[in-house]
Image (cartoon, rainbow, N blue to C red):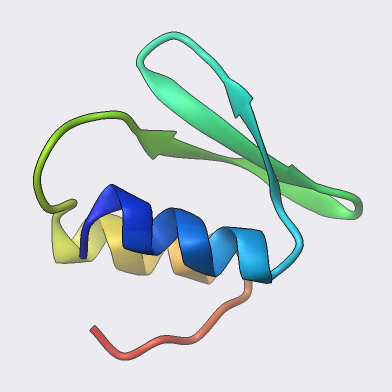
Length: 61
């Protein structure tokens, strides 16, 4: 999954992006902040699963 696809899912779930150092931090009222790595290409499936788990989203990869 690309960073852009993951960001679209987080945005649709109500998260907002804040820029950090090497990661973008996605925040939502009542949820812990979720760091998303900022790099080109696909994000590894394990990382995507972990991010979606912390965001309480279920998507088949």
